[in-house]
Image 1 (cartoon, rainbow, N blue to C red):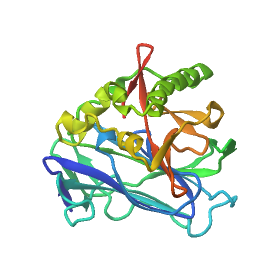
Image 2 (image 1 turned 45 degrees about the vertical axis):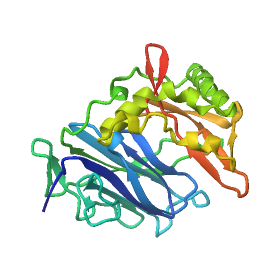
Image 3 (image 1 turned 60 degrees about the horizontal axis):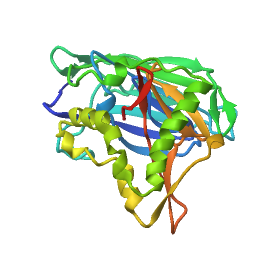
Length: 300
């Protein structure tokens, strides 16, 4: 079996997880994570994190918070799909391709749909390769307390030359330090001040690089993204309210081999969020930064 990549492809991960905590990474970037152990069945679009000539896909999995070991039905399966631009994500044109990884408490391996890639032809073809499976004893701090005792399932595969080299790939290294944390808090504070003022459009010039690269990733005009960070709509929605976190509730999160950083809440959620006035529901919005010449640039 071989899958020919469309001219303007949209890549997405189909995720099925249950009875475990998990963190799914593409090229070292966490694209989905849940440290509560909640079930997940859904799609994550990932064009803006893909790069050539190789893509690394990994899943870190831990037991649910109330268990010391994995329960028998612990499972996390991630399958990369591709579809032509304009096709439905749940339609028949969205087909599985290479780069699949799977964890379960009984056996770990690749589903039959996994295939290696040929970047020269733009074709992803059989035969499948096995994933690497390792114990993961690196602690993760969650709600102020570390947990460990996980497993990481990873796989690298060749990838067609479809996207530009994203600026963050060559960004300055970001040090995990108190100084970095303090500088990020200052940067986020500028954004939060403008959100609290009810004038989100003042923030838009800070998103130029993000808009340009998202447009390239999804084969659209830059104007399709200009002026449209997701939280702009939230600011002007009378049914939602911006919630500014205190510094003691924030943690520094550095990833992608030290090229990207964000502020997160102590449970791992994004630090920029809004509450709904009539129900107990929160909307979280990621702001991910790279470092350049001592300053910060919004990359995603």
